[in-house]
Amino acid sequence: MIIIFLALVVLSWLTPWLNKLGVGQLPGDFRFKLFGRQWYLPFASTVLLSFVVTLISMVF
Image (tube, rainbow, N blue to C red):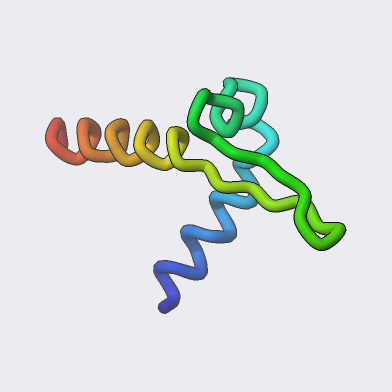
């Protein structure tokens, strides 16, 4: 649980930087408003980041 917590903290800290790189704005990332709240489903960004982490783990 500590690792998950730390990963979420790091991800929330990196979110503005990742948005500047275009992560979160890919085709397949959905944003919509429902019940007065903004919802965000980052399907394409999740696949891309998973692929990058897999490549990094294979190298090291």
